[in-house]
Amino acid sequence: MSPKSTRRPRKPRKTAKGDFFDLRLYVAGQTARSLAALANLQKICEEHLEGRYRIEVIDLLERPQLARGDQIFALPTLVRKLPEPIRKLVGDLSDTERALVGLDLRPRASNKS
Amino acid sequence: MPRSATRPAMVKPLAKSPTGIQGLDEITGGGLPRGRPTLVCGGPGCGKTILAMEFLINGARAFDEPGVFLSFEETVEELAQNFSSLGLDPRPLAARKKLALDYVRVEPNEIQETGAYDLDALFIRLEHAIDSISAKRVVLDTIETLFSGLRDTRVLRAELRRLFNWLKTKGVTAVVTGERGDGGMTRHGLEEYITDCVILLDHRVNEQNATRRLRVVKYRGSTHGANESPFFIDESGISVLPIASLGLQHRVSAGRLSTGVPGLDDMMGGKGYFRGSSILVSGSAGTGKTSLAGYFVDAASRRGESSLYFAFEESAAQIVRNLRSIDLNLEPSLRKGLLQVHAARPTTSGLEGHLSAMHRLIEEKKPRVVVVDPISNLISVGTSIEVKAMLARLIDFMKVRQMTALFTSLTLDENYPEDTDIGISSFMDTWLVLRNVEMNGERTRALNVLKSRGMSHSNQVREFVLTNDGLTLLDVVRDQGRVLVGSAREAHVGEVAGTARSNRKRRPRR
Image (cartoon, chains in turn blue, orange):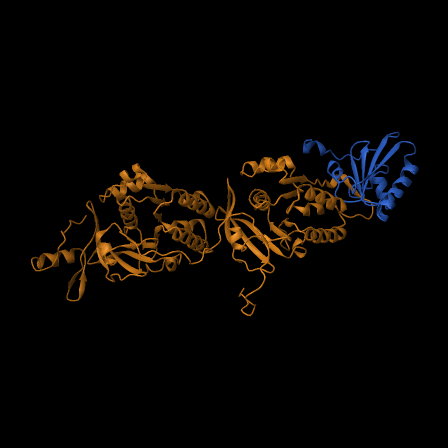
């Protein structure tokens, strides 16, 4: 993987209706924060992505080697693998507005939201 | 900082991890604090990543301490490429599980913060890497990159504090690099969290010459050299040159060696310089400093001893040609390889470059006699304090190896030849002062031995001449309590010819 290819031009592209969302939630153990993140994520998906999403939960305590592939350093982190481009949402997703913006389900108010 | 005199003499010394970096272990008294993090900070291009990588590679190669390199700036491929040119290719060691490299990419554009988080993933990655190779050393380069990707600095700071504490509980010796900031030593104040040992690197340009400096800002629980030390980076990595760190414990020799000038040997107890001593020949322009140096190396060649001549003013060919005019032929010595001349303009590289070259050549050629002609030219590449420090280091370095070194120094003020502008005479065992004496409407050259430690030496000021036949010290001619020089002496000698005890042939003046 060349480092350049990961630098995508930043276009506030709207997610097309009907895009399939492939989501990975990285956590470490069954902590309150992990559980909160998963609950928040499920709620968002049910409300906004009914029937067109998949959530994979990866517990890094069990599979630490997976942190490298998606470049995870903070927990919890939600990675939107699909649709492209890849997005990373750091935190327990309790800030629904930001989570929706991060998933491109809400237009960005400005570049620095 | 004065060392506390009240501290008990028997304290348990702090365990240290040697860096294996030449000079750095000397300054730190054995290395970095074992099992604790050390902060290495400095501006861009100051060499912190190299220092960190060398610490790891030396640990893996020489001290059986595997290491983890966690990079936040360069990918593993980039690191490997950059370091293989320094002879520090981490890949072979990585293949043997002595080294683990990981790249943590922090891409601000990809990251959205959506609530509470911590850096557990970083801990997990690090722990996984440490455990996979039983690492004893860790490098985090440069962890402050996280601040560009995560906006909640409060969380980040708390997490960094937790990270450094966690590293201590893991018992690894860590090097954490930080970019120098405006307000403090690092941009985000890492020095608040890492307090055991802080090393500051500096890369500055002084009159077009880049110089590198290293300073141990603090080292908790250990004494350390607090001075700035020059360091350089070359094909073999980093070398730090601690200032006068070798101490004064070198062997001394009672052996003597000829100055190459018979009259001068006589002035110095008839035997010349001490072996392993350092000699300063100072004088203004055209007083014959290089000629004296030439005689000295010529005498060494005659004894079959090798000499190394650092010329900072003239090329080798120029020196040989000029000395031939006073009947001194260095050509055969050069051909036989007994004499080697290393000529360089002082400005072609920084002070460290010269230090590096000189140390390396001396180490490699192992000459018995070294000449630096002139040492004063090095002032043009550094401040006088730096030159002084560098000279002290060089002198100690040669003394330990029992090499005899002669330094020439150009004095600018003819009236005060004792004021050597670099204040180096205290390092010197023997100090010869050459000067032009203007009297009776003519200039003649005069020499005296200002000091020569450990031997009785003449205190006379002697006239000497440089002619086609060589350098000759003339006998002192006195008339009514005055020392006669030049044509006054010749006239006087002519008058009293027959009665004067002149056993030396008079030479025609040029």
